[in-house]
Image (cartoon, rainbow, N blue to C red):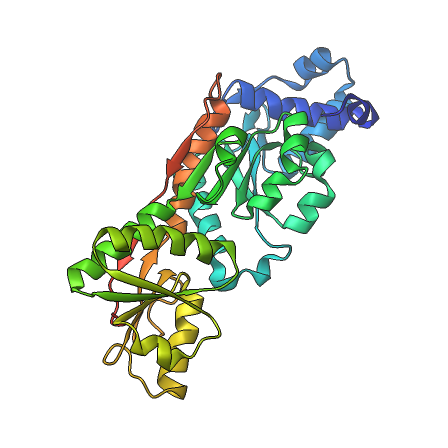
Length: 345
């Protein structure tokens, strides 16, 4: 914490902070005993009343609990710190299909089942950027930050500000950006592996002509580039089309239309069936990437599941290991992916 900010804190607040650090640095477990009030008063040069005020606040936070005549103990649900999960959009509710929430549930599940001394905390991007230079003050007990996609958010002043405050951070998302390798640890949904999974499936199904729907977004452009390399390596013809081109024309040029997000695939299926009278998959097959529409869409999509929940668990595991490592050796690892074979192709 900034020394000037530290000096402005009341003594009891400093004691609260120091006791949380005491629990963290000694890796105390639930129900471990803490020093007595008189020991704490002597340690911090404070009155018994000031120490009790700090302990009362920590008890209210469920960091500690006290037993009359027995002492003060680490609470069963105490955490050493918070792992801030920063979303890729300014308002979390704008994120389509709750992929961020799936990731959060995964991190929370791992923190609970592994009895971590950390817990994930959702932070909206707008709020995080506004308070970027005072992270320890605004978000007390911050142990690290995970950026969910939104690479530009990592590149903003975020990286330098977090490094200046000695706060480790990690990126989770597509491996589109070579700069990540020199910037921070990462868990990827490997885009080359995504392309290979779908290309293998098309080869298995015997498709010889594939179309790809590409818009101006980096995700679809990069996915199409990787997919073209994989599909042509298997001797399958590939042709790109824009979002505004005639769906009937696209369907007439191929056996399967490869969409690079599920939302794109859903819109296409609805257009083909409702407006063009082409049945999926009888007349033309369609696939996507994300696994964000399991079940309710008919026909159910064939898609690549990015496994956000499983990868949330994995990211929490490797990131907390990284935080606790004396050398903090960086990592760039691939998360889990699955091909979901639906009825759409």
